[in-house]
Length: 332
Image (cartoon, rainbow, N blue to C red; front, side):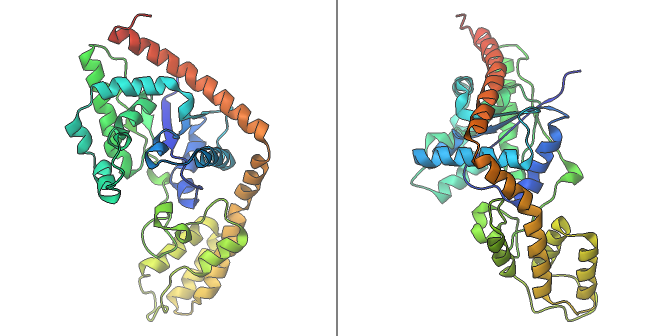
């Protein structure tokens, strides 16, 4: 029986952090044996922010290394650079011909970008949904792991797929659905006491795979706390609950129970909790750091991974674009 095709990408804009891992990457690793997975590094998408050539290459390489360090296996899935598939750009062109200005301007993320960077409202930002649709549909993916901020883009992908199918009276494209990890999703809080862990909230808010032990310890010791509980068994404020959430992710159940009991008895010392959390976080991230360091030194292996991914992804993409060109009316 054929496996379901799953496709997902990540923009090469910086280091991966704990939130990335528990939010998606850990589940990507599990999906490798369950689905036919295509994971791409979205270096075309990053052009909307005009990176320098050096940054574009370095960031793409960095994300590849960290994907591999997190457990993605090029023998069990397809990992490739978005820019290695010219077929994607051809499909992007076809979708743009059938996308309308009004619907693209109504996209929430586009309106946000217009407010945030009024001096860089480029066509790439406007047509981001059609490129995302091409990324997904070039492999005829039926499932897409997406966060809440990408749900509208996925809905538009279904719109473009259905519009093409209707226009040419065919069923060449599936209507992809969001891949739901259900209870396996973990929302990792940031160190600033509110919201989720992420790059956009600042370097000090996140624990990155590449952070050295001294950096991790410093970040956690500076995490926001209060003056301590004043009543037995009182509800934890957000910033304290966040620390306990991080403790549950990287520490033993006994350690969590120990500090929870101290909190409920108004005897907790946040300095001790932070020291425990910092050491457990260092131990948890150590295998990632070691694997990143190992991979960074093996340029030949990285090239082989990219070449293999390019070959596998293009084989899939060529089949789709050949079929699409024929349907549209291009016969050569």
